[in-house]
Amino acid sequence: MSDMAEQEHEREQAPGHASGRRVFVDKRSPAAYQAFVQAAEAVRTTAADAGLDRRLVELINVRVSQLNGCAFCLSLHTRAALRAGETPQRLGVLPAWRDTELFSPRERAALALAEATTDPRDTTAQETAYAVARRALTEDEISAVIWVAIAINAFNRVSILSKHPVRATGQHQ
Image 1 (spheres, one colour):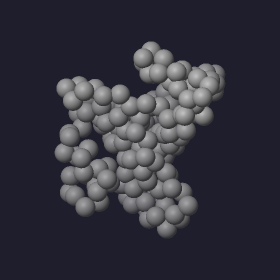
Image 2: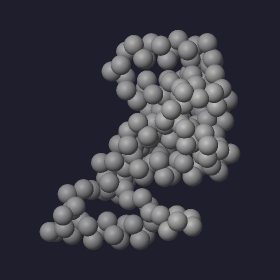
Image 3: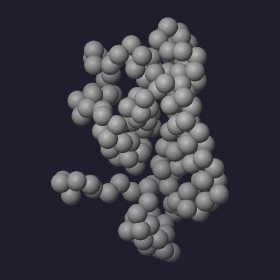
């Protein structure tokens, strides 16, 4: 988080401020947050070792963040996806990925499995996604996709519950 965002957050935390009820849990509990960061680094290594390229990992991060409504993570991972070579068109249609032919069978399997990991209560969708994943992904890739989805789900919750701010970037400031 930038120094400016942290200063603004500290002002908001001042007694009497309307949004002073939120705590940046990553800043308040740095040891727990660092453990999450280390776990995320292990997940990135697992994904790379399984053969998932950075672009697919970032597609998963963006899609899960869309489902969870995490503005901070969407901002962060959309930029990361673009840096990894993802196209603006594919990012733009990602919420409707099933309705396009822009995604490969492997990507579609990974996205469905990530969605099922994000909402495990839908056991029918989970079984369907897993069956598709079995046909398109190796066991190592399936495991890595699930871990990537678990990791971004955790970070989404940290950012959503902390109300991490999204700052304007680029030419539209």
